[in-house]
Image (cartoon, rainbow, N blue to C red; front, side, top):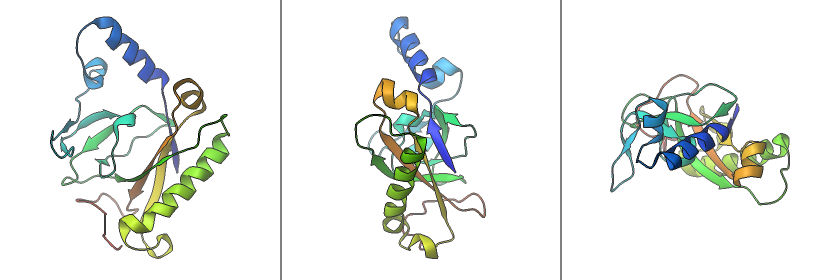
Length: 167
């Protein structure tokens, strides 16, 4: 499962924010609740929507459907959730290489980080991984090169982190 990020909505929201002359979060602009993070640790303490570009390794989230994703439902890892960000990859600059190449690089990069996060090789684990990766428009217009690696348990929601779980 590969999921791409979408920037047109983010660009429009950013423009609205800059033109408004007042402070607002993406959640405020879209009418949704914004996830709250602890100022010191950066951990999510209250569930809510977050810009896909603000994801950090260790963030837990619920599944977001669609081909292009601009915001995601973050939840504290202590609550049941569908996925966790377990790694990040920054792709090399250059011309848009195509969705197949970006997907292959995302798969290879996430695969390489899997064992270090879980504590078990991917082939021996029951867990699966996926990724959020740049779209062509994001690549060309906004220099988006970030891949967020996502880990999940196909058996269902998990509670707590899958880091060092060995499953």
